[in-house]
Image 1: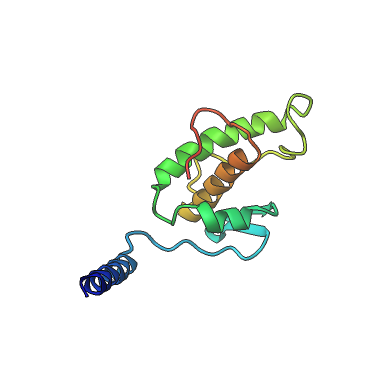
Image 2: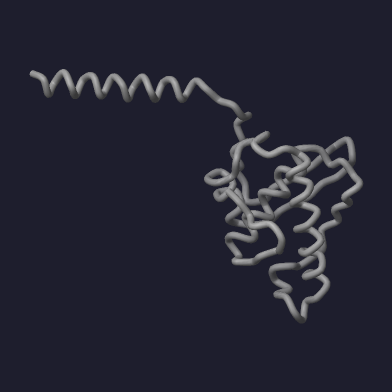
Amino acid sequence: MKRIILLLSALLFVLIGCTITQDKKSFDDKPKLESDTIRIANEELEYEVLIFDVGFSSWFNSFAKPRNYYSQSYLEARNIFWVLEWNRRAMQPMQYNPNLYEMTINYDSSTNYGYEVNYMLYNYLVYFQLTKNQKLGGFTPRI
């Protein structure tokens, strides 16, 4: 009888704990990516990035932090640094794999691209470094 009461109280405790944690959300939910072609855009700036990478959407859905987890200034700092290194490698196809760095990324540090563009670009650059075993230097990518 004591075992049944103990099991029921433990089960009740777990159910209450799960209910409480589901109600509290401190960050916006991240979007679910459905396609392998990802469009990152800021209509006001007429800026658009298209990512054609088969594994990015599933990686994003599994590992990316939710929106507003990082500040825009944090994302911009990482993006500026990583894009500079990306572009340096893209301009040296004899030294770096041209299949990885096919083209440069036009990212101007003085332009405010907004949170969404920086968020998606940051997540792609983290994904790229982790899945392609590349280090763009400086900051270790975090998930």
